[in-house]
Image (cartoon, rainbow over the protein chains, first blue to last red):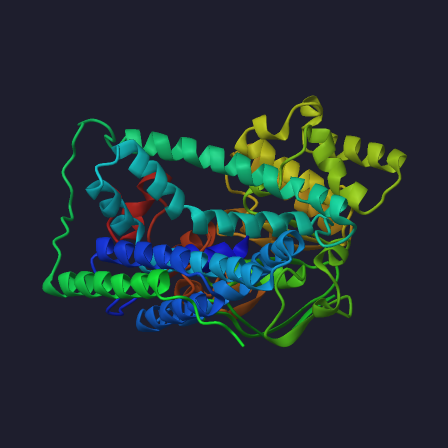
Length: 248
Length: 270
């Protein structure tokens, strides 16, 4: 679970990618996601992942993305094994396994370079209900807090003689109960406290509050949008209409 | 005996939480660790339980290197009551909560029964025996975590901010418990900002600042060193502060304590 913390939690950065309009970053991630669905061969998926890693390099988050990919590999291996057992097709199984990694990376790239405040603004531009936006953004914002809680709860229980990595699968699952119950209870308590704190600061007092930040796309943002769409069209065309290379 | 040998610990974010800490805590000693937030107090005690492993140097508990054993095993010797009780309470009842660690350490059932009754009685929680620990008040939860730790009778007891959320009477009881543990020959380590609580206990005092030990000695020496305390952002006990000012102005007459602030600032009582 801890890998989620590194792979999806925003950390402030100074790269040109970080400074893009959040809506542009969302568009790039959506296009990358769509490209992963269009790839029909493993080498095509490899090209998509290579492109994502290039974007991660520009955004100076390559190490975090690489770590996420490494940790995603466990699930990816599971997908590969299940597919190979069902389809008995190496190419298809490899494609699905690498697609899973690519989807995680495309999503991760957006979340680790976009602050919760920016995320809120992006969601507002889609005219989503304010409460839904607030709930989603709060959930994202609280991921690191919950990760910290998890570590502290694990520390407390290990200090009472709980051995999390001992015994068979059933015992290990049972050993998670002393971790999960305090985690859920703390989250419920925290959400109650947050609701009270928000209400005491006039949350919901007016139906349409003003916003401190208004995003306006700059020339650079517009250029990036045009380049991204053009690049996507070219890639989509080549993936869709050009027959995949036949491996010898 | 707890021994820190030139211990360095660096957090993932690069912060040097412990920077060359060396100290010995002999058996049966009562130690207070004080210092500003982020000074490395909790990091230091987490090394005793093996929850954190040093990047450089080593930590020995009764001669055992903490890197060579699991926390679960070390905890048989070291009991820690963490700052936030909500991070450990999960059982259906208060009674089961106290019994949890005893079961992990494979105590026989009759022994568990005795220990649970003893600890709940000692901490005034016997009436809540069958209640859920989650419905207790903040102070009661704090006492319950202490009961959970003392139930398995560890030789080293670590209390992380034990006075948070406790009223004056409970603080007195906590003081009594620490004195009792001291009389039983246990090593007691108290991490606290509550200098007024620590002062009457007269513990050995370790002052920490930016991951380093900047003061270490008996309370009556350490807590008189206003320069070290100020540099570590620790307030001097009021009694010490008052007598220090009194000694600086022996000619001034004693005044109404409610007017002491004016008196200390150099003004005359009206």
